[in-house]
Amino acid sequence: MLKAVKDLLQGKASLNNKRSPQWPTTRANYIKKFPTCAVCGGSKNVEVHHKKPFHLYPELELVEANLISLCESGANGITCHLFVGHLGNYKTYNPMVERDAKIWRNKISEAKKFLSEQAAYQKELASGSMFVSGSL
Image (cartoon, helix red, strand yellow):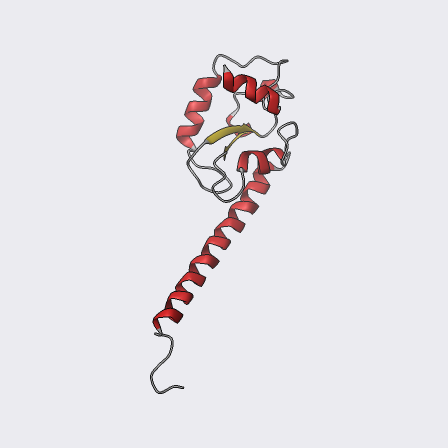
């Protein structure tokens, strides 16, 4: 009940449309099939997001092609559901959420790769293995 009130206040829920009785099953099945966030790949606090929002397109509520997994973990400094799914405001939606999720997934992946390479380089510098004796 408390979550429902919180969602309503944040604009995540609408009073106009009532969820289908099949929604909990559809949601659970989707999370089983797609358990990680489409943006960051995280598996904590994953939500099933409607690409076309339920309150505007209630007929698409249970259509798998209208769903995407987005997290609310904040693991990479952003809440993927809010940032990519709603462009920073739960009262709006992102009509290009799928495209943007792929773009940000690639950006996050490249950043992790870069950081890993930098850490390896720093480790080599610290160990002195980059310098061959007699080369300086």
